[in-house]
Image (cartoon, rainbow, N blue to C red; front, side):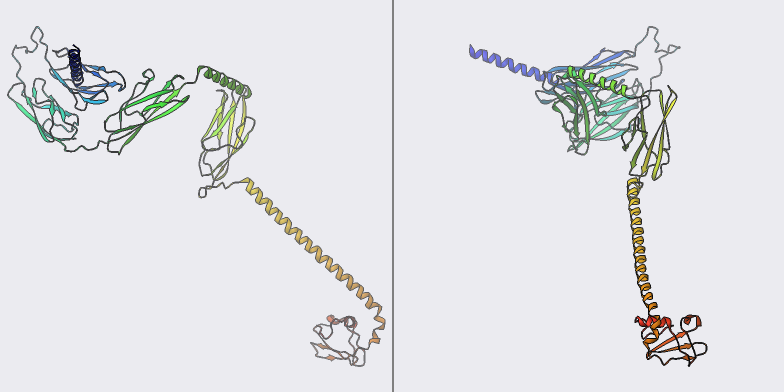
Length: 569
């Protein structure tokens, strides 16, 4: 009995597995109504049952066209059924073809499972009671002979450049594309098309014919598609996401678009961790930055980077997750901010609240009671970006002198007008614009002041040295004159005895005009004295040979040892 129970349980388990696999591999397509007429609205529903995740695209072609995407699920969650619907209005007769593309996938127990399905319905024309298809003469209209297409293509890897007169096309697809869907639209709504729908591809060349039969059932035209499936896959250069979000689900964001790379979401303070999920458009792309993330209080920047299969393209998506503060701390912070605002409002008087110059710093920092500032600009600019903040809307600010700034010192004036009390305050900014070549400030008051002080001290030092030198010379001369006067006094005392010395020197005088020579034999030394004017020898008495020559000055100098053995001119 126990053995029989085990066999029954195994059979039940086996049947359950088969049923699950059958559900996984089946994608259901519903079209309602099943027999639509021209003017009816047709609803197409795509359903993927019993999977963890689904990524299915259904292409709709024929008298209506469009796509339906069924995306959703959580790998770690329970298997579910995912579905999506779209409604279209039938404007003409023809077929509606629904084809699930070959790259659609579903995930069950961590494994990808391929899904595929197709379905079509025919839209017919409504006949009213008075036979509107007949003309006024009750004759049947002549059947159309138009057997051309106005549209033709494949899904996926569609081609471009279709022309109704061109009947042959060649398309290459990657090795990974093993199935395509051919769609076509006839120029005449009453023409019949064959050869469309799902087609399997072998490696290499695949030829498909799409035949159009005109309304007259006699005229036909054939369009040929040559699909070349490559032997090796080429890496895809696409780095985009088809889905992105966070868990817990109740805090996930909506409105994801593959072209939008930045998103913001807020979570309560009790959410300390989140899980980021992401799905790439190409399953062979590499995604980094997803998974579990711990959150701090405040803003958390989460980056999700997608790298294409060929490693040539990357794209970064950013989710800014703000974890809110605790309610008590938030209320306390708001109270503190309100107190600070009230305190600042009470401190500030009506007028200018702040001056901000983009990329530069005012010196000193702004204060309402300081009206003069400086700013150093280490480059040559024509205008500064000056932003002002006022205490109220009643304050108007006019800026003058902030145009065509030149290298060096520039004065910028801010006139602050208070409309309430009709008063004006003036703030002044000295902009020291720098040297364009060196990038240094050319106007530096401190350096100029230091240089000026140095020059001033050098000049004072030179003048002091000159004064000292003059004083030294004057003192030296004064001493020399004193000694000379003392010597003269001594000489005057000895003048009466000058004849007692009995000099034996011989003195000669040559007159340049008469060439006469005067001599005295009372002296033994020879001193020659030449002159061109009698005025130069006024202190020397000249007499004839019988008279005595008195040399007062020469005699004085002689006795002191001066002029000894020298000639005088």
